[in-house]
Length: 160
Image 1 (tube, rainbow, N blue to C red):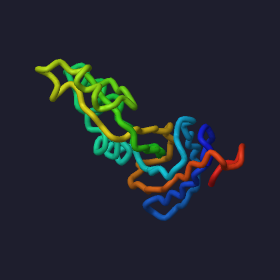
Image 2 (tube, helix red, strand yellow; image 1 turned 90 degrees about the horizontal axis):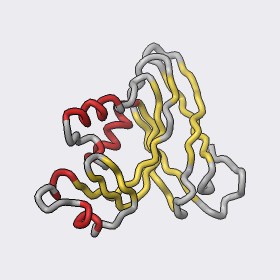
Image 3 (tube, rainbow, N blue to C red; image 1 turned 90 degrees about the vertical axis):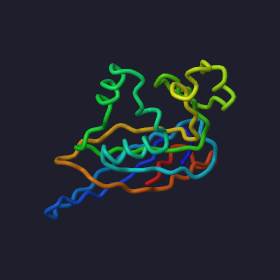
C-alpha cells in the first residue's frame, strides 16, 4: 500500500444466531508514513477505545470535571466497527491536547515543574483512527492485522 492511499479491508461479521454479513472498510494511509509494517486493529467501539487507552492513556485521563465529560462523550459506539492504524512515533500530551512527533526533550519545555507528572505525558505511539461503520446490533471483538506500507507500490492500487 502506498502512503496517501486507501487500503480496503473486508470484515466478515457473524451475528450471535449465525447470520453472516461482509462489509468493506476504507482505511486511509497517512502520507507521512515511512515504508514498513504497521499494526491495524479492526474492532468494536469498546475494543478500539481500550487499545488507545492502553497505548496512550493520557488521552483518557481527565484534567478537570468538564474535560471528563468531554472525554466520556468521545467514547466510541458499540454499534459500529472501527479501523485503527498504529505507528511508532514520539508524542507528547499536555492538558489533554496531543502534540505528535515532539521529542521527549519537549516535556521539560511544556511542563511547569510542579505539574510535570500529571499534566504532561510522553508516549511512543501515534494513532490514526478511522471513521466507524455502523452495524446492526452491538459489536464485540477485535482483529489485529498488519498493513505493509511501500512507497514503491503501484500508484492507484488498493490492497484488500
